[in-house]
Length: 177
Image 1 (cartoon, one colour):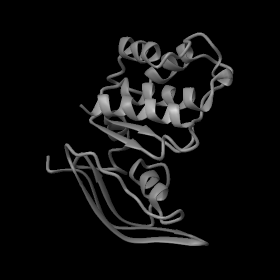
Image 2 (cartoon, helix red, strand yellow):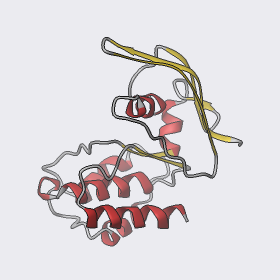
Image 3 (cartoon, one colour):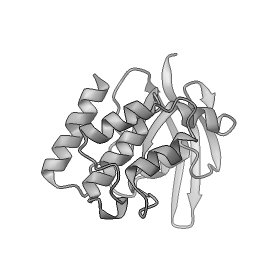
Image 4 (cartoon, helix red, strand yellow):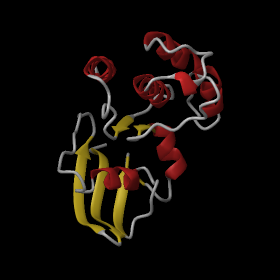
């Protein structure tokens, strides 16, 4: 496969913002960053790739598959972390792992548990008591525990203190290697 992601003539309209005529090829096997000013459409583009919002025009292929017609297969093959972390906060990381395991055909419970240990996340503690950095690490554990072929991150270190940011970037670097 030549490209991990292919975007052609992508368009999404909001009353106050229009994302239009986006063409982008992301080659397989590369770490790629999308940079630009706030409000340029980076998060919108990522949400469109992941099928979290509907496009108004254009085409998106992920791993050679149309992202609308193959949404479930793509989500099984992509590890995704959005800019915000949402959990059932009255439950634990252990419960969360069991819950999300039902959504992934390649879920690896042992790998998930090993990430919880590696990231020093108490498995039985309510997520409500986790810090922002711990919630990002939990998101990463989930994103990596189903053998993703692509990892898509939307500002995962935003709002983290410098020490946690450094730790998270080291974890991502190890994962990419």
